[in-house]
Amino acid sequence: MNAAGRADAVHFPEGVDPDSVDLTAEVSLPAAWSKCWAFETSKPTLWDAGTGWVTRGDLARRTKAAAGRLYGAGLRKGDRIILSAAASIDLVVAHVAALRLGLIVVPVNGAYQKAELAHIVGDADPRAAVVDNPEWVRWLVELAPEMMVVSPRLDIGDDNAPSLDQLSSGDPALLGYTSGTTGVPKGAVLTHGNLLAGAESVRIAWRWEPEDRLVLALPLFHMHGLGVGLHGTLLTGASAVLLDGFSPDAVLDTAAAHDATLFFGVPTMYTRLAQSPRVGELSRLRLCVAGSAPLSADLHRRLEEAAGVRALERYGMTETIMLVSNPHDGERRAGTVGYPLPGVELRLAPDTGEVLVRGPNVFAGYWRRPEATAEAFDEEGWFSTGDLGEFDEAGYLRLRGRAKELVISGGLNVYPREVEDALRSHPEVDDVAVTGTPDEEWGELVTAWVVPATGKKPTLENLRSHLDGVCADFKHPRLLHLVEELPRNALGKVQKHLLS
Ligand code: MLC
Ligand code: AMP
Image 1: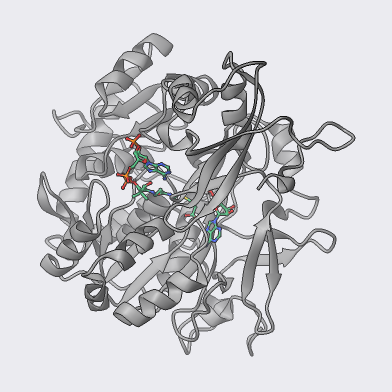
Image 2: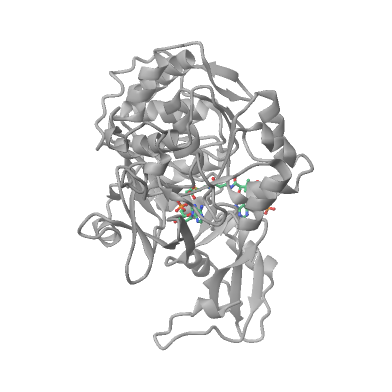
C-alpha cells in the first residue's frame, strides 16, 4: 500500500487524490457517452471494414435512430435483448441503442450451438435478438416464436426515439452468462453503475486519452472486448478499429495503417504475435494489455526482448469486469496481475486464499437465482471469485490456481461439467472426466479422460463429432486419454489433480 493508504492508489496519476474520484459520478455509460458526443462531433470514433470511420455525431444519430426502431417494436426498459454478431459498427450501434433505451443486453458467443442458446433463451426470457447468423435466426424462431429477431443494422426507418439515457446506476444493463464457480450458466446482472465503474477504472489506470486508438480484435460478446475495449473507448472519447477476428498480420497492418496506440488481447493472441517475424512492430503501440487467462512470465519476457513491449497484465471476470491490473507507471511484474484497480477492494480468504472482492464494479447478483447469489457473496458483500491468489513481497497479486473447475482455452471458458455431461451420453463412454492440459499456444487444452464401455475404443474424432451441435467447437476435447478407471475419493468425487 502506498502513502494514500489505499491498495489501488498506485493506479492514479500523480497529483490525483484517489478519495476525490467518484467512479460512477456520470451515473451510466449512455449518459457519459451522449455527453461526450455533443462535443467535437466530427471526431472519428469507430472504424470497420464495411463502413470506414464513423464520428461521434454519427454515433449519436445512429444510436438514437436504432433506439427508436427498438422502441417502435414495443421494447421497453428492463426487457432483455440478445446480441450476438461479428464485431461491426452496426453491432455497436445496436448495443449502445439498447443500453440508451434501458434494455438489458445479453451478449452471447456466436459459436454456441442450439442447446446452449436454448438455455440462455429459457433463462433470460429475451423479447428480442440481434443476430447475424441465419442458422441462429431459425433456432430462435423455433425456441421463442414471439421474439423479435433482427439483423444488426437497426438504424433504418424514422421511428421516434423516446427520451433516452434515463437510467440510474442501479438499473440492470447487461446479463453476462457465465457458470461462475459452479453449475449451469447463469446471467450475471451488471448494472449501469457497474459498467461505468468498470470502464472508468481502466480509463484512469491505463491513462487512456481521447487521442488513443485501439486495435480491437476481440469478440464483442465477452467482457474483454465489450466491457473494456468498446466501453472504455467510448467513455474516453477515444477511437477504435474493429477487426472481425484476429491474426497477427491484421493487427500489425491495422496498427500501422491507422496509427494505433493500444492493443488488448488474450495470451493466445500474444503467443501468435510473438511467433510472427513482424513482432517488433508491436513497439509502435504505447500500451499492450493482456488478460482473460494467465500470461506466462516467459511470454512476457519474450515480448519485451523481441519488441520492447512491457505487456501490462490485468485480471478480470464477467461478474466484476476488471479487478486487478499491473501499473501503467511503475513495474509491470511478469507472472503477476498487479494491484486492485481504482475503487476495487480485494482480500484473500484466510483459510483458502480465494480472491474476494467488493466495489462499484461488482455485479448485483445472478439473474433470477437468489440462492446462487447468496452463495457467491458473504454477509459483508464480498464476492468470491473462485480464483486462488497470493501477494508477493511488493503487494502484487499472483494468481496461483482456481478453486472453481474451469478450463481456459484461448481466453474462452470451458466448464468441465458441461463437457462431461455431453460426453457421458456417448455409447462407448462408461465414465469421463474433463481437465485442462497446459499448452503454450492455447493456455490449456480441453482434455477428456475416458473409461470406455467394455470392448470399445472411442477415438477423439468420435467424441468430438458426438458434441457437434451440442456444444460450441471450442469446448470439444483436443486430447483424449483412455483409462481403466478414474481416481475417486471416498465420496466418489473424481480427484482431477491425479489426472495428468
Ligand atoms: C477458436 N477455436 C478454439 C478457440 N477459438 N478452440 C479452442 N479454444 C478457443 N479459444 C477453434 C476454432 O473454432 C477452430 O476449430 C480452431 O479452434 C482453430 O481456429 P483458429 O483459426 O486457430 O482460431 P481463431 O479463430 O484464430 O481464434 C483464436 C482466438 C479466439 C484466440 C483469436 O479464440 C479469441 O478471440 N479468443 C478471445 C476470447 C475472449 O474474448 N475472451 C475474453 C473472455 S472475458 P475448427 O474445428 O474449425 O478447426 C474474460 C474476462 C477477462 O475472460 O478477464 O477478460
Ligand atoms: P469469465 O468467467 O469468462 O469472465 O472468466 C474469468 C476468469 O478468467 C477469472 O475468474 C480467472 O480465472 C480468469 N482470468 C482472467 N484474467 C486472468 C489473468 N490475467 N490471469 C489468470 N486468469 C485470469
